[in-house]
Figure (cartoon, rainbow, N blue to C red):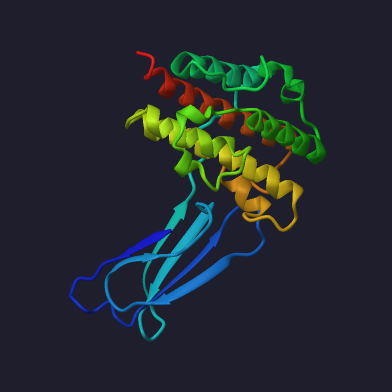
Length: 254
């Protein structure tokens, strides 16, 4: 988070203190806090893993008197979950991307004929265990993606895990597309990575980022009001990301 501090008279901001507090999720019982002494006007950056649900900044003078204050609230996710997706929406979204990938590169993207065979992605969720299981299936689908070596720079691929499908996709897409389609595709892949991080966080206690932060990146509060809605939110984000990825790739076919 970046707070911009101005001054009416040059040099008067020095000696002031900028105090901030925030919550990653509104359900948290306590705030996280930080403070920085100012040497002058300008932008002051606070390192936070994800845009907080609530952020407040106060500027105090050398006597501790309040000079100014500002607040920020995270906007609700653009991926609306008001209308539930069809049960097979996520497998079909993967299928559509794989089909366009084949048209663009003449290579198969998936190590299976149809991702729809990953039936668990279409199953409902009722519990935390169900949610974790669906995320595992989502991760397995990503692992089934194969990016042919001819589509990437072998030197750039060094250091990537053999099953680092998203990393390899980024390298290949970087060669296939140009902005703005490239930017859209990279943003979409970033969302898929955020979903994978939720799987890691929910299954590994000491994962970084932790579960509240990982969920917040998808616009999901922690703890979720119910796990069914949390999974629906993940599906909406995933389907929207795969749609954006497909549309970006389609630009290379035209």
